[in-house]
Length: 455
Image 1 (cartoon, rainbow, N blue to C red):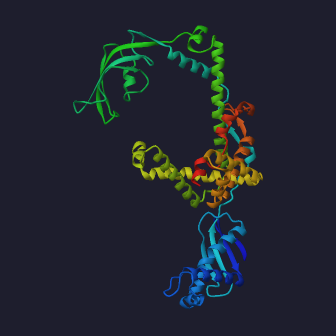
Image 2 (image 1 turned 120 degrees about the vertical axis):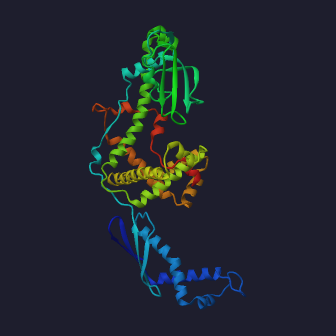
């Protein structure tokens, strides 16, 4: 077999394959043995139909058609492997010679995965929030803690944001009381926007005994009219920040110790968030270098995958697609359009990471593959050999290698981008280091355990 490849427009190629007559004849023998085995002719036992009878019934043309039907998929697959083409769609095959006899020559026009350019990939800059807790963040956490120990004091002044007001609320629609919009002695915190739009503005500045009415076009179930009586206004009295408060509100004896603990906790969360953002924003920056459009074939394939994933997640939550559409106020076309946008970004990210792996000579060796299979086997509760066999039988080893290569490319990328905070100051990578457990939660992986199970 001889092959040649000619680049066509876009990301298509024409693969020309020439198969020698000897190889075609060998395939013809295999085809005749299959036909003899499969034929069901009266007077002959299954699998015992003479070859000459098959030849007589089908004729030379019929035999040749069967041979080509059997052989072309195999010839094409061998040619793809020999040419090392990364095809992403079914081919259009045209037999140019050998339809009746002799050597076979055919052309296969096929779409291949494009190679994209990532100019300047080694000079990317990523902006992240600072990984250290700020005094403002610590103060906010202390205020939240003080809220939990707050006391209430009735006041005669007008209500303001943060006050707790006691209300009688009576909602009507078409002059009839509306269930769910009517309550006596309702305690409500001003400024939380928890009843209907506009009520906080009416409550701010209201005093005890005041009655006001308002229309509520956004009320649950449709527009309604509200009549509100303010019966009580109470303000929150927060405890003073002191060692005594720290002792009462925590396991620490002093306020300084409590602040130090909050700083440690906040910084830990911020480091974890920063590492997630680093991976996400580094990939976004890399994708931003890609000028080429994502191939529609790959976008359509990724859209179907995302749609299947969405339906599976909804099924696990016992939610139908119709219920999801109603809850999100979206149409099927709007959902698909959103998935197509995400799919195009995912495809471009994949192409960009493949390009990065190519440029930086990032490879996956057998030890990497063995380690990943062992990880999957452990998560799936199976033996590594069984998982490998399943992956091989379903033709997913090559895909696993590709995903591992992309994961390595992501690691390279996050290690080499420049990191600055929101003020433009360089961030020391040491400040982003996580403990082993936290690091595993942000490490790029390949297949999930469930995917290994399903494979």
